[in-house]
Length: 185
Image (tube, rainbow, N blue to C red; front, side, top):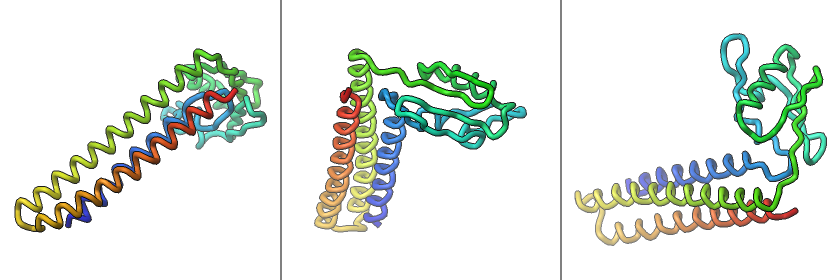
C-alpha cells in the first residue's frame, strides 16, 4: 500500500519532467526545432486540428523550418495560426509551403531565455515537492491507522526521498544542458 503511494508520486514526478522537456522544446534557441510549432492547432473545416496532423514539418537548414501541408488550401490557416501564436517568427508562404526563418539570438534574448529555463526548472521542482508531500501524507496516514509500523514509515520516507532526489537531479541536469545550449553562440 505505501509502495502504491510512492509509485503514484513517481508518476506525477515523471509528468513534471515530461512537462519540463515539452517547455524546453518550445524555447527558441536560434536553431530550428519542430517542437516550436508542434503544439499549434489549425482551424480547418470548422474544427481545429493539430498542425502535425495537417502538414509535414521539416528542417531543411539549421535555422529554418519548412511546413508543407498535404492540402494547399490549408496554407492561409496555418500561416494565420503561426502569426497568432506569437512565436516571434514571420511565416513566409510561397504557395507550396511555409518557411520560418529562426533569427539568431541576441545576448539579451539569451539571458531572458536562461531565466525562463530556470523558471521552468523551478516549476518542475515545485511539482516534485507537491507529489512528495501528497505521498508522505498518505504514508503517514497509513502509519497513524496502524496499517504500517513506524519502522516501515521511516523506510518508506527514505525510499520516497531517494525518488525525489533522483528527479531533482534530472531536472538540474536538464536545466544545465538547456542553459548551455542557449548560451552557445
